[in-house]
Length: 84
Image (cartoon, rainbow, N blue to C red):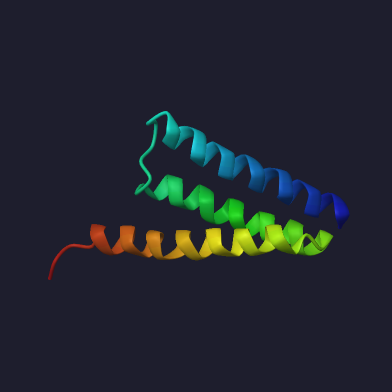
């Protein structure tokens, strides 16, 4: 179990850093599904890792991260929906 939690933590860290790096170098936009998906999955994986290790300040910031990404993803899907 500990190995799985560690792997999730590392994958989550890479996802968040990748999103930030790609956005910083204009490879993806902050309103893209890829950017928000990397932040969402990275945040969720980091929440799992930090709760397991009792790192609650990090858990808090990742919960906020996910709460920002979720509505952004919904907005992206609503924007792509054809007008009725």
